[in-house]
Image (cartoon, rainbow, N blue to C red):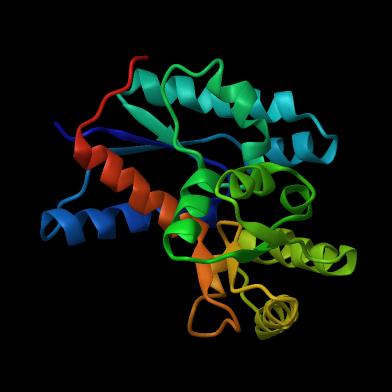
Length: 235
């Protein structure tokens, strides 16, 4: 039996890309116009940002759990969140969640190892880059990683929060990410993690100096695979 996917949404652009990818991947695997059942719930993105600004990860987790409860009540069998940064609260959430989750960084790290990459560049918000969300999962897969410099992470964060989450895509933003990825390539990286779910809206394999690991689409694809497997974990 196909499982029902619940999307805990944060920013509109990332959640929309995840939803579209689930529908497209479902059709690719199951046939024209077919995809698993999907529900999406979103609290105010501003509430998440306020918690992140004050370092309140339990508050972030409580927002995620509020959406999780509504999605579970609506029939979702498992949950995903197409927002890398809020996975800082994942341990808090999973211990209290009414349904199982897929972890975005675990999905990405597993894909990186399967593709034979050894040293990954990290990109994303300042909150994510300074967290252990990806380092912990990459280390499990015995993968090395490179963080952006303090100056790079500040500008990447600004582009995400002031432009990408609003659907504003500027050539200057693309050029800056290309510059950072080129520097990571010189530092020995063989791929880069697009660790913010909006970054794939401006960066991809066609315009990146490094192969990209698109966290949004990888999570969506993993969710489709799980939904179609029919596996149900104990609640």
